[in-house]
Image (cartoon, rainbow, N blue to C red):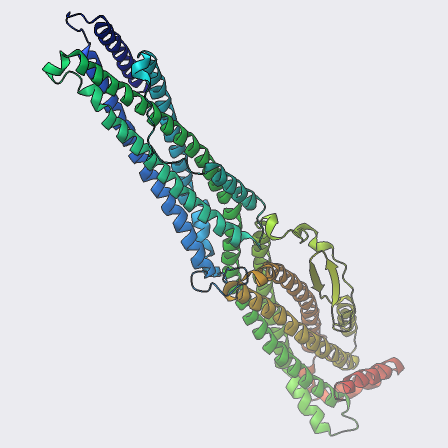
Length: 625
């Protein structure tokens, strides 16, 4: 197209030159010879100029449509951000002019920023850039052609210029470009506190400069329309037979052609200038689209992803709370049942100094092993519930970890990386105790404080194992006293498990509160950073809960082994012959009490008496409150 247009304008210039020289020569010589003018060549050049101008005008109409699409996209971004931040309805809600963000709409603006829409808008801007370059090329070709035509005219004809008072002034593109550069820099340096303000300014800049580009293409289109009109003097050359034979009128018409040629030159220069400037402006629009998609898209995407992750974590945390509640109920029932068993064992051991019938009744209650079996079932149930709870907690931790890893550095510039969270020093205290007046150990790192709670149940597990070994080695009489010690220990440890279950539930409740705050809380600039930290709090609470659950499981499983040993000892053993007491159930049979007395006489020694006394002493401590 440009070569064809150039050729046509070249023909026009050559025709103007040949015709003008011939007319001037004939006028100067004042001969009556016929004036020879290439009317056909000039007319053809005029037609081609007119056609090219129409093509340029059509090109401009396409660019105007595309520029308007770009303006609409900028407006859509601005409107969406206003909707997310509530700026359109709460202009006074923030000292910075930005309202609270609606977390439920993070995904909407994130889709605009890094989805197909912004890619389409960027491609649209690139097309505009290419079209503006075509306008530059066309205008440059027109300038060269017009200059050759004007140079071919004599000074008397070529003296007029093509400028008019109504020609538009070039907008201050340099200032607009500088503004766009600043917007690009602001987006590059964006952080959590400036994401809304910088994003709003960027979207507004895209809209305004898109409108400026559209207006400039309107001007270029008007220039092209003027060229269409001006080219009429070329196209109409030779339309009147009488005028074409009159040298004076031909000279006058040639002056009109020269004036129109200068006008075309002026319009072509304006087209070139406007097209060059708008192309520069569009390049910065493209840059702003790209940096906005990269930086803002990443930020909004991270926030949207975090919200989705917490939505799934909400289900897991609620399930953890439910499992904690079930386990708590079972631990209370287990502790109550173990106390009842302790009462029975106390009655049995005190049968010589108390009501024998009461001791016999306790033996009958324990003989079937149902109470002990119930304790085993309850403890096993707590094990099962907390094993499932561990799975839920691990899923929560992993999900939140992923959300944090996907956070761009600009959102958490002062927070330490998640890889170094496992090296926090933790102090331990036996039997459920923790370091610190408030039951916590605190480690401060960078911008956040991590509070870690953990118990060391190693000593407690060892105590239960020792009780189990004692019961396994117990004889006919001491099995009862050692079982009493065992149930005293079980009662104590299950009580501690209950407290730890309550603590674990507290971690889950903290996570639930943080999730609700992230999902539904205010997201104004003053609290936005706190919401990001809530991700860390949720993860820390999850890790704390996991540690407590693991400790609970150690204790519960040690209790289960002890309970199984007691049940095995009470239900198994020897057959009761030769004066040996085999099973508690045998005591309630005929001769059972006689065998028990025989066992006491044959097996009882000083250590056994001492063991019974210690067992009763521990048992009595349960009822001091």
